[in-house]
Image (cartoon, rainbow, N blue to C red; front, side, top):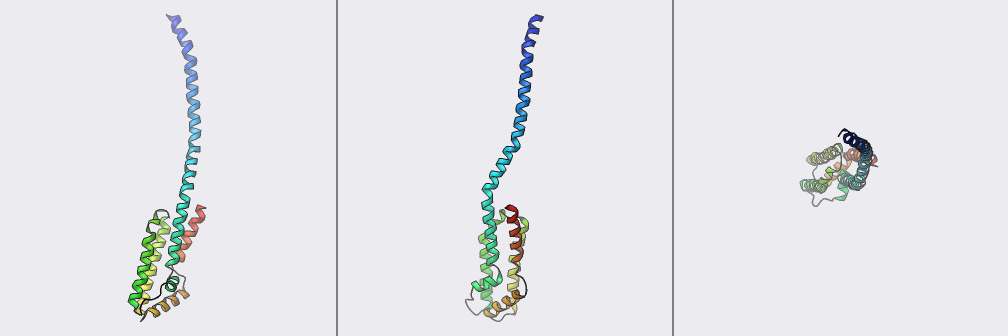
Length: 170
């Protein structure tokens, strides 16, 4: 009986050693492959999402350009001589542009989105402020253009944020 037990151990021992060595080698191989596969997945993800992110930045840059007060006043002519009507038309235009691009916030950073929101509010507030002292729609246009000829438009800040983020992506 002891002979059979020793004979069994002689056959089982090399098989067990071979099995353990195989197990150890496969685990090491798999451990080495994980970072490579993660890198490949990440690279594929970046390849897929980069065009979407770039498009979001393009749209938000266009939004900033479209709400630039001077450019907006040149593009949107008064429909009447009434200051209040023209102010409402300008604010409605800013709000419409904003709502059209609202979903882009999921693709851009929080800092850039905050800068865009602040710019939108700043533009609307400045239009309201200038409208209070303007007697006509044309005077509103002139006063806003004069104001922004002396200072930088608020849209320059988010545009700078957008450009910096795009440089980081590329």
